[in-house]
Length: 213
Image (cartoon, rainbow, N blue to C red):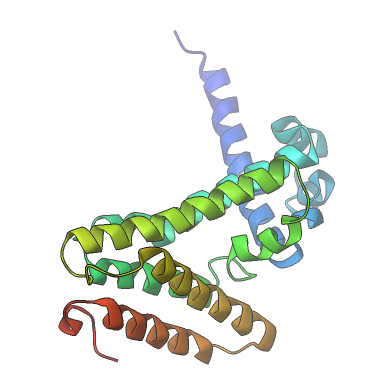
């Protein structure tokens, strides 16, 4: 028989963990993962520092847990809904469109969480960098996977260079994110969306498969 007291403690611990990680992701997207500390999060959320420490144990574990939490939010916002769509250039466009909205609407206060913290850790070997590198690779593979599906569906030219196409698409998205943050300029998202559409049209077998400007 399950002890209801134990169940209650576990549920409370899970809720506290989600609360801490939600705030940690917001902080990290603006100040970087280095800006996180167990004491700061406990103070801001009015929690016991010893209780927060018990959940994570160290700053590195907190950073890793924050990266994993951000990945779940990102996937739910950008990738998961698009997987339900039919394969083709329209699916690729929707993936890019949702990424631009994810950045534009500031799902994370600092724009794309992974763009922000990736720059922070790209030259720092260790477990956090490894986790970020794995996430970056998974994103690029996702874009390539959707392009491959579009090719198989017969909606991309047979001679399309999918590696190059993937590289250019991701570049448009990340540049829009960077410029919007640095210059507080939301118009770059519309420009990036148009660039994505022009590129996809140039490689599609039928431009009408994609939306008009």
